[in-house]
Every structure is written in structure tokens, then in C-alpha cells.
Length: 344
Image (cartoon, rainbow, N blue to C red; front, side, top):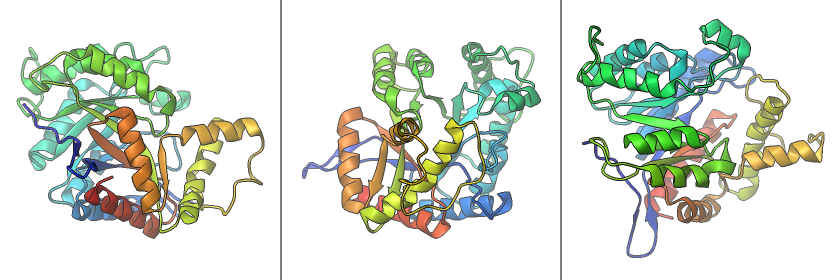
């Protein structure tokens, strides 16, 4: 049975939580994918030094601002450049792939980097309809076949498949996480007794119902005796609240383009969004997307993390940070690591 670290509370009343990094390998304006992947490795190396538990990468397609589309390849790149931090997917969109191929890819990664690979799985396409067509994913697919695909994948890894073997992969104890932004994967993870990670960094409105559904539907398994939930949040930390709010405008600009149906590289931050909001409606949507975000100086971050911990009772946290300047992104994660180390 895999041992998962969990939040504890010390005698002085502070929470001490396992924190991880969720990286989208952002391609920033004026840069390219090569630079993005180099910066991701640099961030991972710093995250390892600062004591982060995991470094996860996400699968997205047809997005000009994301360089981690070939997620398993990037995981290998990050794992090869680090030595102790766990590296994994947050996540692989399973309906985009043949389960055998996923088992072989992650079996290979686990064989190369024993005891350091996580396999987080989602059921969304991670793309738009043209990209879904290019992936050869059926346009009528709603992800309802996800449980069957998951069962097939697990059979390759646990050695119960008949006729076809995943080599490498068969018999390797690669931790599987189910990821979600709604109740489907939450309930499935609970019924299967698997750890669950919720994407509140872009779907904050459903985090509490999903966590409740996961916990109430949980059945002990060979993997877990009790529920284990990780919550993803946005973190923008800086020396002052004002600077942190400025850093967060890059993500606000990104959200604004997405709700208009556009994309593009991550843009530089701006001093104020007041002249950029085209309507109060769009402003409300974008600011709502950042409800599960910690934005501010270390003292502000500490207070927000405590509030969110008491609200969600999360077992682990994973922080995303869509920050334009690489030095500022490193500083943000360093400040967060200091807050986590001291407790919140």
C-alpha cells in the first residue's frame, strides 16, 4: 500500500502540508517552446531544493501558450534533470490515448526513474474540437468510457490483462490519481479507493461538492484505507500584495482570451486591469476563476492557505503559477515554500 503524505497540525495550531508544483510549461510572449521547457526544468530543480513533494505537468493540445502537450516526454525530461522529487502527470487525458500505450510509456518512465513517477489521469480532451479530431478522438465522446479505459489501463499495470502485456509496465506499482473538475471522477475515485485531485485552480465553484462526493463514496482498497484528496490552487506570491496582484494579471489576461474563444502565449503583467475589462460580466467571470487563489505577500499567502485548508480539509496541495517572468515565478514558489515550511 502506497503511503501518501498528509496535512498535520502542530501544537502551535499551524498546518504543515505537503505542497507540489503544477506546471503548464508556459510559452510566454516573445519566447518559444524550447525556452519554456528549459524554464520548466529549472523550476523543477528549484522545487526539489525547496522541498516540494511532486512536480506535475498537464496535457493540453492546440494551445499556443502551453509546451507540455507531449506530457510523458516532458516528464522524462524533468525526471532526468532532477533526483528526488516525484514527477508525474496532472494529467494524462486517458480518452485521448490507447491504455496500452499509456501503460508502456509510464512503465518506461518508472523503469528509468524507479519510485518517482505519478500517473494522474483525466477524462477531458484537453483540447478543442479540431484538436480532438486530429487526435482521432471521436467527437461524440463525452468521457463516459473513462471507467472502462481506466480498468483496461490498470489491468496492464497490475498484470491481470489477458493476451497482451505492457512491457515495460506490467507489475510496476505506479501510483494512479484521478483528476477532475466535476463530480464524475470524484465519485469514481471514491468507489475505486484511489487518490483524487481536484482542479480548483480553474474550476473553483465545484471543489467542495466534489470533495464531499469523493469522501462519501470512498471505499477502502489495496491502494488506500481512507480518502486522500489533493487540491490545486493558483499561487502568486511576491514581496508585497501589490506586486503579487500585478503578477496575477497575466493569468487574468489569459482567462479573458479563453472565455472569448482565443488563446496565445502568456502575456506580461499589467499595472491595472481596469481599462482592459470590456464588460462587468467578463470581469466577474475572470475574477471568479481566481477564487481559489492565494495572491499576495507571505503573510497574505499564509492567511489564505489557512482559510482554504480549514474550508476543504485537503490532504495535499498543488500550486499552479502562470507568471510571465521566470525570475518572478521562481521567487513566488520560493516564498510559498517558506510559508509552507514555517506552517500556516
